[in-house]
Image (tube, rainbow over all chains, first blue to last red; front, side, top):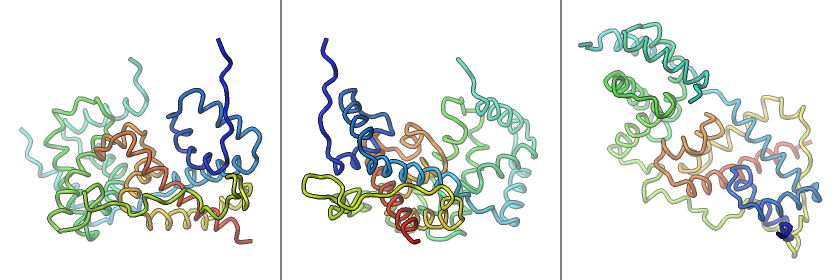
Length: 84
Length: 206
């Protein structure tokens, strides 16, 4: 039984690991090292916050509505669709 | 087996659709049509062609609806049909498509953050700053993010659109785009890094 040994990760490495971290694609020792770094590094914490903000904002981008003509055309195609 | 509210809603809509209920079809078109059209535009040259691809997709849905088993969500199923049709169409147009062998990103060596921002041992020299929430609320923040996504190479744009804009899970995005988990993650990483950088530039403007 040994405590998980965390290793020192430089900030430059942290920013390349952020996606693996958020995707849950890290093994336990690396995750522990990553989290230990974050706990002591406000800069990398800010980096992660910016990534989080970008993800949240992306989630608010709505696709443009269909044009009324196109929508009407789709409904017509549905009506005319042969049903057995 | 637990059934999520979304699956429940899918099942209801599908049952109505099988019965030829036009209101259910209209509801589906309004729910997913705009997203399908946006996705199609990643593959084909014009909005008009994208609309044709979307129309073909709905017809394929009506044809295949009896065979849909609900193993994936309705949204994932729709997106996958759309993507296959849009790819075929884009190929015929001779376009360079996401995930064709010709569509390498060209930025395989790029780092998430410019190397100049780090000191020699890899610590930040020019660190990012905190995120002032009130500046994120401005429509301008969204416009910048949207712009940054539009400027991405096609592979990255497809992945971030499905994951962060449409809210699909990693599994679902892999399923729709026919990607391995690792490739999906690498593309998402590059895409998010660039979008973050654009957001940071906006935040740095006083």
